[in-house]
Length: 163
Length: 163
Image 1 (tube, chains in turn purple, yellow):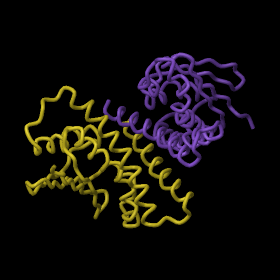
Image 2 (cartoon, one colour):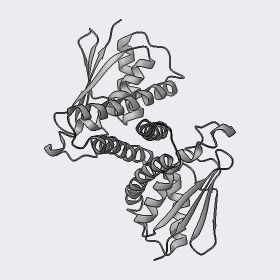
Image 3 (tube, helix red, strand yellow):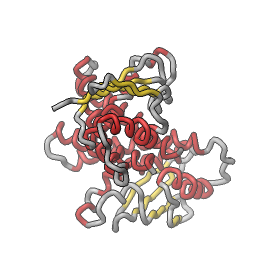
Image 4 (cartoon, chains in turn red, brown):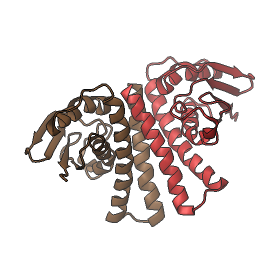
């Protein structure tokens, strides 16, 4: 519990630091500045995801296919990192996966009011990176994006990049 | 366990981000640049420490004096935040306290070789801030510094600022 709070507080601070930093360099934030911040946070998440997966899969059997890896991400990995399982996993069986978490841990600290909906993407960039980093270490290149329509519910779209 | 790792990984990323950021703005790092980075990290820790103490003391009885507060920090707070108790608390009974942790959680990831000794202060700034923030919310203004002579052992010096 305490560890969880510790992580969440540090995450909030980090998001706010990265955005303030970019703002003080360039004055007003435009879309390009926001993209820079998102990319910084995503990159941090990516490296953390790589580190985490090494720990978590040390004693795991190997995976039989892509879907097997995605199921592991949705169950074991999600539980360890985001403290619950994904509520719903959908796929088109062609490399696109939609992971829905109805109560995403890093959004529950924000008010569920609509006024924070615009801010939500800031708080998801790091997590998108974590997922992409984890998949990368399991041999899957991917593009991961997130979408929020009703807080604190969140959908992550994972598109596996075929070689 | 996973939550702990999550926090430690994010902390490492954050330290490295803050330092890289300052470096890319100013080229070579000098002492002033290092002080700026330390202060950024300390500030983030301060706000997190304030947030944490609010959670942890919600159901705690009030404290009878300064020493009582320091004991709480060394036992309950330290266990929740840094996963073990402080090994040794010393005081001159005039507002100066030395908290020694022989296996400080944020240093155990670093090699214990001497080559990292110079780097250790980077990884302690955030924690100094956390302690200062916690004390501040308990009504004590302080200056908190850290000193490492043999990794992963660490001494935090807390000097309470009397009004």
